[in-house]
Amino acid sequence: MPVRDRYHENLKNALIKDGWNVTDDPFHLKWGKKDLYVDLAAEKLLIAEKGTEKIAVEIKTFSGDSEVADLEQAIGQYFTYLAVMSRNYRDRVLYIAVHEDVFTDIFEEEPLGKLILEDYKIPLIVFNPKREVIVRWVIWNNTGS
Image 1 (cartoon, rainbow, N blue to C red):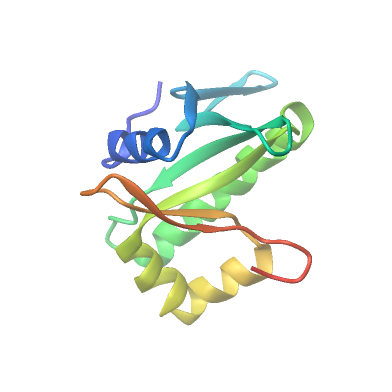
Image 2 (image 1 turned 60 degrees about the vertical axis):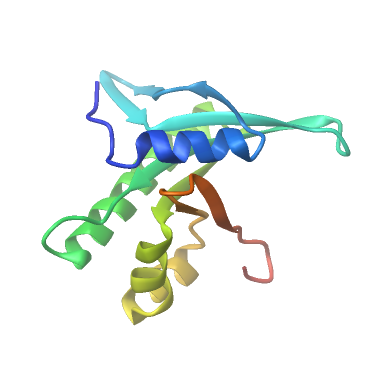
């Protein structure tokens, strides 16, 4: 089992406050002999659409010595999980969740983070860990964010 990220419980509480039902903590993926663990999985009943939205969320703290190394690790992990999920869990959208300060520093103000986010259209959940609330969803469609 993986070690939980620093803000694991904060994000989990933020999702619950936002109306999500956390279904897996962690969300287990298996490919061949390899076991992978996405931090959380959740679902939300969409009354207007008469369906259920399902997500998987990988929390990233970007607390290492190098923001570039943290970005490389987060992106690599995201695409590894996405490859498995695209075959076995097509009904779930995979998100990376980041603290709002990380979002500002790395994905809004840092050109490399903006480039990666825009080129690869990675969905993000931006949250405030102290207030345990979701501040922003970065969701991509065919015309951009």
